[in-house]
Amino acid sequence: MIAILKHGTTPEQTQHLIQWLARMDLDVHVSEGAEVTVLGLIGDTSRVDMELLSSLDMVETVKRVSEPFKQANRKFHPNDTVIEVGGVKIGGGNFAMMAGPCSVESEEQIIGIAKAVKASGANILRGGAFKPRTSPYAFQGMGGEGIDLLLKARAETGLPIVTEIMNISTLDLFADVDIIQVGARNMQNFDLLKELGKTDKPILLKRGLANTLQELLMSAEYIMSEGNERVMLCERGIRTFETYTRNTLDLSAVSVLHDLSHLPVIVDPSHATGKAKLVPPMAVAATAAGADGLIIEVHNDPAHALCDGAQSLTPAQFDELNQRVNKIREAIV
Image (cartoon, rainbow, N blue to C red; front, top):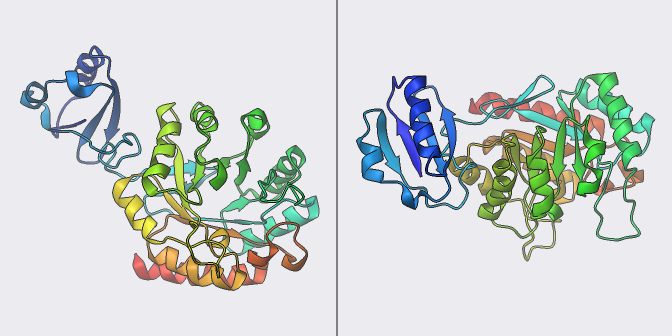
């Protein structure tokens, strides 16, 4: 249930109403927009007398929210959420370009790529330290050492870093990481999501290979229900009957998620297509669709990459892509 307060309601009146609702064992989520203040009521709202609440002078309207996700719902939070990390703003018209290798392989590699993508306009460095792989024999990443190298790359370039967590037990290693990524395979690892909800770190939550958008939003709700509202949603392709591409990039998800939720939406065309030549057109299309950012795999030597070289752009190709993305952004503003 949401209660929209009338323009001009004082902070004292709002606080008095919140206290009254709290006495009904309800959690109250407050969203203050430019025009209106929205109170989101979380809990057993059946005990709330809608007519009585609607009759209060300060209340404009009261509505029940039918969707199971509450805090991620745009009805609870009409204005776009803007997440700021390391001086970079994401969402609400601010665009994030995340770029870097699928996996960290060496200090020389990650620092070299970090400098290259920054020179081309990237404002966040991505790189995998822990790698969930389909085969147990494939390269699994450098683990904690990989995070240390990402931190060195940040020190060299000033770029905030995003890297993937796979297990609650390694959470302490992410203390200095700027953005924690939850991969597609962990989208419904609810114990992990709840622990991340207790942190103050921005979370990049990727859609699962076979999950609906509502399921993605419910996973975001797990994080937000624990107190962390700094969540970004990532469309990275879903599994369909098509086999030419690694996955099928669902660009309709960008518009649908913006309609349903206030959270920023990032698109990953690298994992979606699995082919470097398809990354630029899908990145451009995602930008035109209104994505709040892209996450692109870039490697200095894709042919010899230890992970996902086939979908990685070279620094030169990334530079060209970023120029195209900027032109699209200028055209749609």
